[in-house]
Image 1 (cartoon, rainbow, N blue to C red):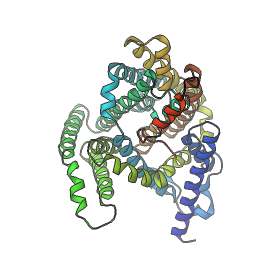
Image 2: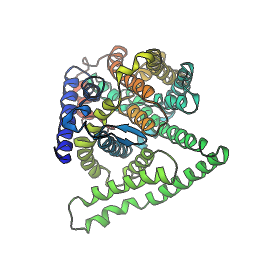
Image 3: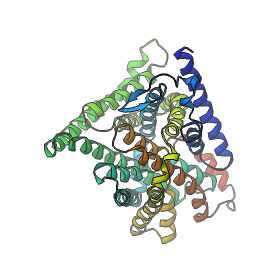
Image 4: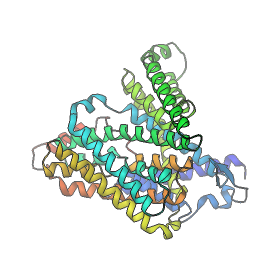
Length: 430
């Protein structure tokens, strides 16, 4: 069978499976990302192992991708997934509302800080307790646990009419700040992990210099992005603004790896934040959402399941269960305690902590990067996928348990749904 036919058949299978599984998950009250990851697990080595089927070239020799051998089409799936991650983080940056971060103030900042600190320390300690090397695999486990997915909590808060409540606004603001802090932690860990294996203290100092040079240059160039619209208006081609914005996102991502010595997704996220401060933000959002969520993101979520193998977790059940528990407890405690110390009541702080539990797509992005970079092993990666599924599943019912429903407020639910229908939330999978 011609290779191009194999590619087309595989992509048709992955995209349709992701969308159908996401729709089924939504029908039973779960986020669509939950169904998409499960679809990947079902299609992957955990169950059907479709990449091992003869129709997809299983008889061909395996290929190497980032130092890891994979089935012939496995490298293609990972490459498309990597592009999907870059675009997904560009969307997240594009929709990062800096004004909202300032509006929610100190409570959201400190809740986010606690939600990064405790999971980071707890995740690294838990991994080390099960024999995972603290530097740098154990530290990276802590990095994965710092993530928070705002889209899942936002959808649940909308459903129960609490999206614009005091706690709801704090959760949304803290989740955005958490993302920024998580990106900083990820960049530092990746940079130091690479430097530690290439020359010790002098290499780490060089990484710091490279980071400063990269961010300074990226911010300086970012001042000119607002003029991109005027430039593209003079071009007689289709979708010039979207094309150049995507090119800038890819360039920022590539330079983050090559020049800054940090994760590529840091660069695309920064590009999104910079574009988000220009007048073309909304116009770009419509186009990049269609591009990202029609192909690349479905392949990314299903591809996560294709890379994970739950059958290998047998000897690592203890590690997996511990990571799941630490992920839930440390995030809820860290966010809740710091919110309480910032003036919230115990009940309000509990609601904020619960709303920050879900890792969703953000946790998957960080875990996938760790695997492809060789920082974590496949056992830790598979445990991280289970953790993402567990935290995604428990967050909606816990939010409904801690929040009262506002159905008794005249027009309250309808107003919440009308407000939430506006395109302001980050990365809503599916």
